[in-house]
Length: 510
Image (cartoon, one colour):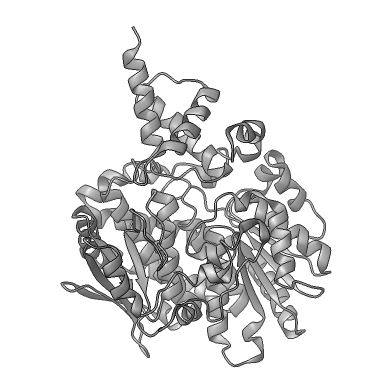
């Protein structure tokens, strides 16, 4: 996106008034807590998770209604599509993968289709600006064969994502079944302040499910509580396991993730502080591990996962290995429980196509290949597995080993959500110790699309005020962000660079 385009359309991306973009009052000192008491930082995040999951008690009727509609669709021989963008896109693909595993070899195995902005490629690497175009959502839905009798479940944390809204318009044009629109901000607020959302919310042929969870533990990081609640709601609807909501609530109250995760928090942050890299090895939770490790890149401005053909300078801090997969195709089959699907769109010149996807190799051969690729960096390994036939999650490194017992691990959706929460919490506390956010503000957010540029500007407004710096004015601030984004290094933060420039210019004035 160019500067002039953003300035003309800035109101389209202005979302700071939405609760999911706000600052959680309980986590204002989270970054300091990750350094002084990482165990208490973990427990604090767990309390915010619990608070969010409890809100689902208000939505049980809607979840049951969605469940009835989804099962009527499946029983009629049609398909259920789940669309999303970023975290909700990965949520859609994770739910599809879990549903395929549940119904492997049965007629329903191929009747859930997950889709995300940027296609399957975006599961591993964010696609800049793709989410800004509603037409891409409608086109993608058509490419995947959505037709009469099919059902769409459109999932957007904020309730305003253009790509996801585009899939709703596509579903309305192609099927008589009412699509569902699942979001996490108050309906009235969206309808009165975001025109594209209003068109969907007031449409007589769209069912809405509002799951209001409030601010995230880390401001704007909707991969956390919002995505957890949405995965739980849609997952329960698909499997009809309504008791899972109460079980997760009980487990979040009971489990002491602080004691379980803190040794691994210290271990992983020490690896990064010494300039090393971490390899996550798993056979039982590949899509959960891939989701969390991929999402670290845009949230904390880390180098994204590199392809097997990579020959650049910056490699990702962490990577994934699936020991029971051989070729790149087999590793993707283990992640998705199907073959990956490329977006062979001419305007992307093969960048999102199948060949490009298969250049990411997560099979067993990738471990040694990546170790050679990133030398002289040292690659340390962390192992994450659920023990077959038990309710145990085991996490281990060469020097640590610990297990977590929970009945959630006996349920495919419950297992996905518990591992998601564990990994989200681990990475959030590790990144706090690495200085990748301040308080609960994402100071290292990457401004890769209109929504994130707006978020960057809002965070700058807040930090300029906190630091008592002179505000350069809205237009000048936008220009600074674009200038900095165009010249910044691979391991530098736009927000911090802009703040330094404002401070320097203020000091140089007579």
